[in-house]
Length: 366
View 1 (cartoon, helix red, strand yellow):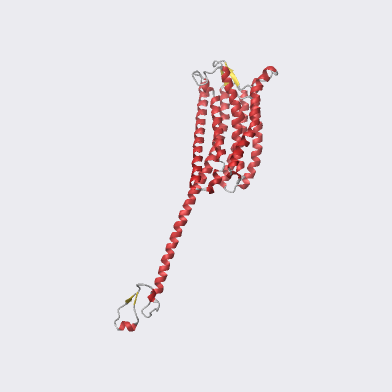
View 2: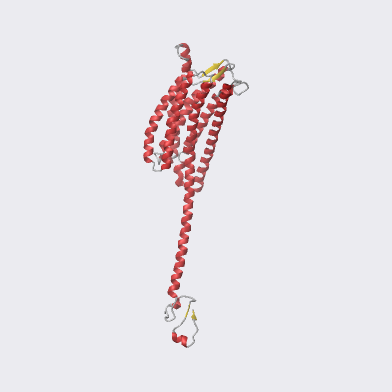
Protein backbone atom coordinates (compact mmCIF):
# COMPACT_ATOMS: atom_id res chain seq x y z
CA UNK A 1 0.00 0.00 0.00
CA UNK A 2 1.45 3.45 -0.91
CA UNK A 3 2.61 5.69 1.91
CA UNK A 4 0.15 8.44 0.93
CA UNK A 5 -2.77 6.04 1.23
CA UNK A 6 -1.60 4.94 4.69
CA UNK A 7 -1.34 8.54 5.91
CA UNK A 8 -4.75 9.37 4.43
CA UNK A 9 -6.26 6.39 6.25
CA UNK A 10 -4.54 7.57 9.45
CA UNK A 11 -6.31 10.92 9.05
CA UNK A 12 -9.59 9.02 8.72
CA UNK A 13 -8.95 6.93 11.85
CA UNK A 14 -8.00 10.06 13.81
CA UNK A 15 -11.23 11.72 12.64
CA UNK A 16 -13.33 8.78 13.84
CA UNK A 17 -11.54 8.74 17.22
CA UNK A 18 -12.00 12.48 17.77
CA UNK A 19 -15.68 12.30 16.84
CA UNK A 20 -16.10 9.36 19.25
CA UNK A 21 -14.50 11.41 22.04
CA UNK A 22 -16.76 14.35 21.22
CA UNK A 23 -19.87 12.14 21.26
CA UNK A 24 -18.81 10.53 24.54
CA UNK A 25 -18.20 13.93 26.12
CA UNK A 26 -21.58 15.13 24.90
CA UNK A 27 -23.46 12.10 26.24
CA UNK A 28 -21.74 12.43 29.63
CA UNK A 29 -22.73 16.10 29.79
CA UNK A 30 -26.34 15.28 28.87
CA UNK A 31 -26.49 12.73 31.71
CA UNK A 32 -24.81 15.26 34.00
CA UNK A 33 -27.42 17.88 33.04
CA UNK A 34 -30.33 15.56 33.80
CA UNK A 35 -28.71 14.57 37.11
CA UNK A 36 -28.25 18.21 38.06
CA UNK A 37 -31.81 19.11 37.12
CA UNK A 38 -33.29 16.18 39.05
CA UNK A 39 -31.18 17.18 42.05
CA UNK A 40 -32.54 20.72 41.93
CA UNK A 41 -36.15 19.58 41.61
CA UNK A 42 -35.77 16.76 44.14
CA UNK A 43 -33.99 18.72 46.88
CA UNK A 44 -35.74 22.03 46.26
CA UNK A 45 -32.55 23.93 45.37
CA UNK A 46 -34.47 26.58 43.50
CA UNK A 47 -31.75 29.19 44.09
CA UNK A 48 -29.65 27.27 41.53
CA UNK A 49 -32.32 27.49 38.83
CA UNK A 50 -30.33 30.15 36.99
CA UNK A 51 -27.52 27.68 36.29
CA UNK A 52 -29.88 25.08 34.86
CA UNK A 53 -32.09 27.57 33.00
CA UNK A 54 -30.76 26.96 29.44
CA UNK A 55 -30.48 23.18 29.88
CA UNK A 56 -32.56 22.43 26.77
CA UNK A 57 -30.38 24.67 24.58
CA UNK A 58 -27.26 23.00 25.99
CA UNK A 59 -28.65 19.61 24.97
CA UNK A 60 -29.52 20.99 21.52
CA UNK A 61 -25.93 22.18 21.18
CA UNK A 62 -24.61 18.71 22.00
CA UNK A 63 -27.02 17.10 19.52
CA UNK A 64 -25.88 19.51 16.79
CA UNK A 65 -22.26 18.59 17.56
CA UNK A 66 -23.07 14.87 17.34
CA UNK A 67 -24.92 15.44 14.05
CA UNK A 68 -21.96 17.33 12.64
CA UNK A 69 -19.49 14.67 13.77
CA UNK A 70 -21.55 11.92 12.16
CA UNK A 71 -21.47 13.80 8.87
CA UNK A 72 -17.69 14.15 9.10
CA UNK A 73 -17.38 10.37 9.42
CA UNK A 74 -19.67 9.74 6.43
CA UNK A 75 -17.46 12.03 4.32
CA UNK A 76 -14.29 9.97 4.90
CA UNK A 77 -12.63 8.17 2.00
CA UNK A 78 -11.67 5.47 4.51
CA UNK A 79 -15.23 4.10 4.30
CA UNK A 80 -15.06 3.81 0.51
CA UNK A 81 -12.22 1.32 0.28
CA UNK A 82 -12.80 -2.20 -0.99
CA UNK A 83 -14.87 -4.13 1.55
CA UNK A 84 -15.82 -1.04 3.60
CA UNK A 85 -19.28 0.29 4.43
CA UNK A 86 -19.82 2.68 1.49
CA UNK A 87 -17.92 0.68 -1.12
CA UNK A 88 -21.02 -1.41 -1.91
CA UNK A 89 -22.87 1.71 -3.09
CA UNK A 90 -22.64 2.63 -6.74
CA UNK A 91 -21.01 5.86 -7.87
CA UNK A 92 -24.29 7.76 -8.08
CA UNK A 93 -25.31 6.87 -4.52
CA UNK A 94 -21.86 7.79 -3.21
CA UNK A 95 -22.18 11.11 -4.99
CA UNK A 96 -25.56 11.65 -3.30
CA UNK A 97 -23.97 10.90 0.09
CA UNK A 98 -21.43 13.67 -0.54
CA UNK A 99 -24.20 16.08 -1.52
CA UNK A 100 -26.08 15.19 1.64
CA UNK A 101 -22.90 15.88 3.63
CA UNK A 102 -22.56 19.40 2.22
CA UNK A 103 -26.22 20.25 2.84
CA UNK A 104 -26.27 18.64 6.28
CA UNK A 105 -22.97 19.93 7.68
CA UNK A 106 -22.20 23.17 5.88
CA UNK A 107 -25.85 24.13 5.49
CA UNK A 108 -27.32 23.03 8.81
CA UNK A 109 -25.09 21.56 11.54
CA UNK A 110 -22.26 24.10 11.48
CA UNK A 111 -24.48 27.21 11.38
CA UNK A 112 -26.64 25.75 14.17
CA UNK A 113 -23.54 25.02 16.26
CA UNK A 114 -22.28 28.59 16.13
CA UNK A 115 -25.72 30.16 16.45
CA UNK A 116 -26.40 28.08 19.58
CA UNK A 117 -23.06 29.14 21.06
CA UNK A 118 -23.92 32.78 20.44
CA UNK A 119 -27.41 32.46 21.90
CA UNK A 120 -25.97 30.82 25.03
CA UNK A 121 -23.54 33.71 25.40
CA UNK A 122 -26.30 36.21 24.67
CA UNK A 123 -28.55 34.58 27.26
CA UNK A 124 -26.00 35.33 30.00
CA UNK A 125 -26.70 39.04 29.48
CA UNK A 126 -30.44 38.56 30.07
CA UNK A 127 -30.38 37.02 33.53
CA UNK A 128 -34.11 36.76 34.17
CA UNK A 129 -35.02 35.40 30.76
CA UNK A 130 -32.94 32.25 31.11
CA UNK A 131 -34.99 31.17 34.11
CA UNK A 132 -38.09 30.74 31.96
CA UNK A 133 -38.70 27.50 29.99
CA UNK A 134 -40.15 29.72 27.27
CA UNK A 135 -36.64 31.12 26.67
CA UNK A 136 -35.34 27.65 25.72
CA UNK A 137 -37.98 26.96 23.09
CA UNK A 138 -37.88 30.51 21.78
CA UNK A 139 -34.11 30.27 21.40
CA UNK A 140 -34.33 26.87 19.70
CA UNK A 141 -36.86 28.28 17.23
CA UNK A 142 -34.61 31.29 16.60
CA UNK A 143 -31.59 29.07 15.90
CA UNK A 144 -33.54 27.02 13.36
CA UNK A 145 -35.05 30.14 11.80
CA UNK A 146 -31.69 31.89 11.34
CA UNK A 147 -30.17 28.68 10.00
CA UNK A 148 -32.92 28.18 7.41
CA UNK A 149 -31.59 30.69 4.80
CA UNK A 150 -28.15 29.05 4.92
CA UNK A 151 -29.72 25.64 4.44
CA UNK A 152 -31.73 26.83 1.42
CA UNK A 153 -28.67 28.47 -0.19
CA UNK A 154 -26.54 25.35 0.20
CA UNK A 155 -29.38 23.27 -1.20
CA UNK A 156 -29.55 25.53 -4.25
CA UNK A 157 -25.79 25.30 -4.80
CA UNK A 158 -25.83 21.51 -4.64
CA UNK A 159 -28.99 20.93 -6.68
CA UNK A 160 -28.88 23.70 -9.30
CA UNK A 161 -25.13 24.41 -9.46
CA UNK A 162 -24.02 21.29 -11.41
CA UNK A 163 -26.88 21.69 -13.90
CA UNK A 164 -25.98 25.35 -14.39
CA UNK A 165 -22.33 24.44 -14.95
CA UNK A 166 -23.12 21.75 -17.52
CA UNK A 167 -25.90 23.45 -19.49
CA UNK A 168 -25.37 27.20 -19.19
CA UNK A 169 -21.74 27.78 -18.32
CA UNK A 170 -19.47 24.88 -19.33
CA UNK A 171 -16.38 27.05 -18.80
CA UNK A 172 -17.10 27.29 -15.09
CA UNK A 173 -14.64 25.21 -13.09
CA UNK A 174 -16.29 22.13 -11.62
CA UNK A 175 -14.86 22.77 -8.14
CA UNK A 176 -17.23 25.75 -7.81
CA UNK A 177 -20.33 23.57 -7.59
CA UNK A 178 -19.35 19.86 -7.48
CA UNK A 179 -19.68 18.06 -4.13
CA UNK A 180 -17.87 14.90 -5.28
CA UNK A 181 -15.10 13.85 -7.62
CA UNK A 182 -14.95 10.38 -9.18
CA UNK A 183 -11.61 8.59 -8.83
CA UNK A 184 -10.88 6.18 -11.68
CA UNK A 185 -7.74 4.94 -9.93
CA UNK A 186 -9.80 3.73 -6.98
CA UNK A 187 -12.47 1.99 -9.03
CA UNK A 188 -15.00 4.75 -9.73
CA UNK A 189 -15.20 5.75 -6.07
CA UNK A 190 -16.75 9.16 -5.37
CA UNK A 191 -14.52 11.35 -3.15
CA UNK A 192 -16.33 14.09 -1.23
CA UNK A 193 -15.09 17.60 -1.98
CA UNK A 194 -16.05 21.10 -0.84
CA UNK A 195 -17.72 23.25 -3.53
CA UNK A 196 -16.18 26.69 -3.57
CA UNK A 197 -19.59 28.35 -3.69
CA UNK A 198 -20.61 26.51 -0.52
CA UNK A 199 -17.39 27.65 1.14
CA UNK A 200 -18.03 31.26 0.10
CA UNK A 201 -21.52 31.11 1.63
CA UNK A 202 -20.05 29.71 4.83
CA UNK A 203 -17.50 32.54 4.79
CA UNK A 204 -20.25 35.16 4.58
CA UNK A 205 -21.94 33.47 7.52
CA UNK A 206 -18.63 33.56 9.44
CA UNK A 207 -18.29 37.31 8.83
CA UNK A 208 -21.79 37.97 10.19
CA UNK A 209 -21.18 35.70 13.21
CA UNK A 210 -17.87 37.35 14.10
CA UNK A 211 -19.27 40.86 13.74
CA UNK A 212 -22.11 40.09 16.14
CA UNK A 213 -19.83 38.11 18.44
CA UNK A 214 -17.40 41.00 18.98
CA UNK A 215 -20.27 43.36 19.73
CA UNK A 216 -21.78 40.85 22.16
CA UNK A 217 -18.43 40.10 23.76
CA UNK A 218 -17.93 43.73 24.76
CA UNK A 219 -21.29 43.73 26.53
CA UNK A 220 -20.55 40.50 28.38
CA UNK A 221 -17.09 41.57 29.49
CA UNK A 222 -18.51 44.73 31.04
CA UNK A 223 -20.78 42.56 33.20
CA UNK A 224 -18.13 40.03 34.26
CA UNK A 225 -16.29 40.91 37.47
CA UNK A 226 -14.86 37.47 38.22
CA UNK A 227 -11.42 36.90 36.66
CA UNK A 228 -12.14 33.20 36.14
CA UNK A 229 -15.35 33.98 34.25
CA UNK A 230 -13.53 36.68 32.32
CA UNK A 231 -10.94 34.15 31.14
CA UNK A 232 -13.73 31.81 30.07
CA UNK A 233 -15.43 34.53 28.05
CA UNK A 234 -12.13 35.46 26.39
CA UNK A 235 -11.50 31.77 25.57
CA UNK A 236 -14.95 31.28 24.05
CA UNK A 237 -14.79 34.45 21.98
CA UNK A 238 -11.31 33.60 20.72
CA UNK A 239 -12.35 30.02 19.97
CA UNK A 240 -15.48 30.96 18.02
CA UNK A 241 -13.93 33.91 16.19
CA UNK A 242 -10.90 31.91 15.03
CA UNK A 243 -12.19 28.38 14.37
CA UNK A 244 -14.90 29.20 11.81
CA UNK A 245 -12.79 31.61 9.69
CA UNK A 246 -9.89 29.15 9.83
CA UNK A 247 -12.16 26.35 8.65
CA UNK A 248 -13.49 28.51 5.81
CA UNK A 249 -9.94 29.38 4.76
CA UNK A 250 -8.83 25.75 4.74
CA UNK A 251 -11.91 24.59 2.84
CA UNK A 252 -11.24 27.29 0.27
CA UNK A 253 -7.63 26.13 -0.11
CA UNK A 254 -8.74 22.53 -0.61
CA UNK A 255 -9.78 23.29 -4.20
CA UNK A 256 -6.11 23.89 -5.08
CA UNK A 257 -5.32 20.19 -4.68
CA UNK A 258 -6.67 17.14 -6.41
CA UNK A 259 -9.06 15.14 -4.16
CA UNK A 260 -6.87 12.06 -4.72
CA UNK A 261 -3.75 13.72 -3.32
CA UNK A 262 -2.55 13.57 0.28
CA UNK A 263 -2.55 17.37 0.46
CA UNK A 264 -6.34 17.42 0.09
CA UNK A 265 -6.75 14.92 2.94
CA UNK A 266 -4.38 16.93 5.15
CA UNK A 267 -6.23 20.22 4.51
CA UNK A 268 -9.60 18.55 5.11
CA UNK A 269 -8.35 17.07 8.38
CA UNK A 270 -7.04 20.44 9.58
CA UNK A 271 -10.39 22.03 8.73
CA UNK A 272 -12.13 19.28 10.73
CA UNK A 273 -9.69 19.75 13.62
CA UNK A 274 -10.39 23.47 13.86
CA UNK A 275 -14.11 22.89 14.32
CA UNK A 276 -14.04 19.78 16.50
CA UNK A 277 -11.82 21.58 18.99
CA UNK A 278 -14.26 24.51 19.10
CA UNK A 279 -17.21 22.15 19.60
CA UNK A 280 -15.41 20.32 22.42
CA UNK A 281 -14.42 23.54 24.17
CA UNK A 282 -17.99 24.81 23.85
CA UNK A 283 -19.42 21.66 25.43
CA UNK A 284 -16.91 21.79 28.26
CA UNK A 285 -17.26 25.50 29.04
CA UNK A 286 -20.97 26.06 28.39
CA UNK A 287 -22.42 22.73 29.53
CA UNK A 288 -20.09 21.04 32.00
CA UNK A 289 -18.49 23.96 33.87
CA UNK A 290 -21.74 25.82 34.80
CA UNK A 291 -23.13 22.63 36.35
CA UNK A 292 -19.86 21.81 38.12
CA UNK A 293 -19.64 25.39 39.46
CA UNK A 294 -23.19 25.29 40.81
CA UNK A 295 -22.66 21.91 42.51
CA UNK A 296 -19.43 23.11 44.10
CA UNK A 297 -21.27 26.27 45.17
CA UNK A 298 -23.90 24.09 46.82
CA UNK A 299 -21.22 22.02 48.58
CA UNK A 300 -19.47 25.14 49.89
CA UNK A 301 -22.84 26.48 51.02
CA UNK A 302 -23.49 23.29 52.99
CA UNK A 303 -20.01 23.48 54.51
CA UNK A 304 -20.60 27.11 55.49
CA UNK A 305 -23.96 26.24 57.04
CA UNK A 306 -22.46 23.35 59.04
CA UNK A 307 -19.53 25.51 60.14
CA UNK A 308 -21.89 28.29 61.17
CA UNK A 309 -24.05 25.82 63.10
CA UNK A 310 -21.02 24.32 64.85
CA UNK A 311 -19.72 27.79 65.65
CA UNK A 312 -23.08 28.82 67.07
CA UNK A 313 -23.21 25.73 69.28
CA UNK A 314 -19.64 26.41 70.47
CA UNK A 315 -20.49 30.02 71.36
CA UNK A 316 -23.61 28.91 73.21
CA UNK A 317 -21.58 26.35 75.19
CA UNK A 318 -18.95 28.92 76.13
CA UNK A 319 -21.66 31.37 77.16
CA UNK A 320 -23.33 28.73 79.33
CA UNK A 321 -20.05 27.90 81.07
CA UNK A 322 -19.35 31.58 81.59
CA UNK A 323 -22.82 32.10 83.08
CA UNK A 324 -22.35 29.20 85.49
CA UNK A 325 -18.96 30.53 86.59
CA UNK A 326 -20.48 33.94 87.10
CA UNK A 327 -23.24 32.41 89.23
CA UNK A 328 -20.74 30.47 91.33
CA UNK A 329 -18.66 33.57 91.94
CA UNK A 330 -21.70 35.53 93.07
CA UNK A 331 -22.85 32.80 95.47
CA UNK A 332 -19.46 32.06 97.07
CA UNK A 333 -19.06 33.90 100.47
CA UNK A 334 -15.85 34.64 102.36
CA UNK A 335 -15.45 33.56 106.03
CA UNK A 336 -15.93 37.14 107.18
CA UNK A 337 -19.18 37.62 105.42
CA UNK A 338 -22.61 35.95 105.23
CA UNK A 339 -24.96 36.67 102.35
CA UNK A 340 -28.62 36.91 103.19
CA UNK A 341 -29.54 35.64 99.74
CA UNK A 342 -27.44 32.47 99.84
CA UNK A 343 -30.48 30.36 100.60
CA UNK A 344 -31.73 30.98 97.11
CA UNK A 345 -28.98 28.73 95.60
CA UNK A 346 -29.26 25.04 96.24
CA UNK A 347 -26.57 22.88 97.92
CA UNK A 348 -23.92 25.54 98.32
CA UNK A 349 -21.49 25.06 101.26
CA UNK A 350 -20.15 28.02 103.17
CA UNK A 351 -18.95 28.86 106.70
CA UNK A 352 -20.87 30.97 109.22
CA UNK A 353 -19.56 33.91 111.17
CA UNK A 354 -16.60 33.82 113.57
CA UNK A 355 -18.97 33.74 116.51
CA UNK A 356 -20.61 30.60 115.20
CA UNK A 357 -17.19 29.08 114.53
CA UNK A 358 -16.29 29.77 118.15
CA UNK A 359 -19.33 27.85 119.27
CA UNK A 360 -18.17 24.90 117.12
CA UNK A 361 -20.96 25.08 114.57
CA UNK A 362 -20.46 22.86 111.55
CA UNK A 363 -20.68 24.32 108.03
CA UNK A 364 -24.28 24.57 106.89
CA UNK A 365 -25.42 23.19 103.53
CA UNK A 366 -28.69 24.07 101.88
